[in-house]
Amino acid sequence: MSQFDEFIPTENHRQLKEENHENRQHVRLSLRKRENENLALACDGVTVTLLHKNWLQSHKLGIANIKDIGFGGVGLITAISLDKGQEVYIDIDGYRMLVKISRTKTINSKLNFLGARWISTDEEKIISMINKIQPALI
Image (tube, rainbow, N blue to C red; front, top):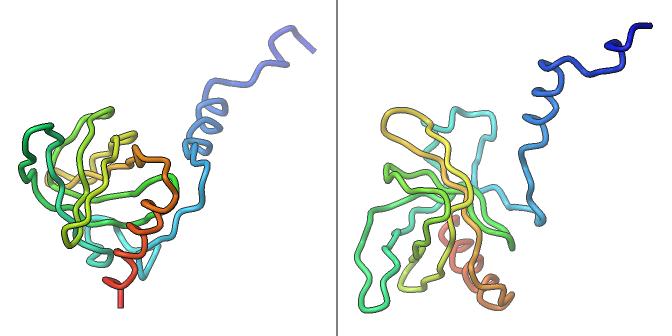
C-alpha cells in the first residue's frame, strides 16, 4: 500500500458533498403532486406574492410558487432573481412573513428555485403561515 492509497479520490469526495447538500434541521411538507416531475413543468404548489422588505412601505417584486414548506422555511419557484442573504416578505391573502434567501438555483432561463428560511422563530406565526397555505391546496 502506497502513501496515496488511503486518500479519497477527488471525484468521490465531490460526490459525497453533493449528496449532503441538504442542511435542513426541519422536515418539509412537499406541495408537489408528483415528485419526479420536471420542476420547470410542475404546475402544483401554492402561488404567493413576494414583496420587497422596506421599513416605510413594501412593493411587489412578483409572484412565486411554494413547492415545499416547513418549520425551517420554504422552497419556491419564481421568475424573480434574488440573491442569497436577501430578505423578502411572502404574502398569502394578506398574511405576511419575512424570509431570508438561503439557497438559489437556476432551473432554466426563466425560472429560479429559492430556498428561504423564516426570519421569525415564533412557532405560532410559522404554524399560521402553514395553515394559510394548506387550505389553498384543497
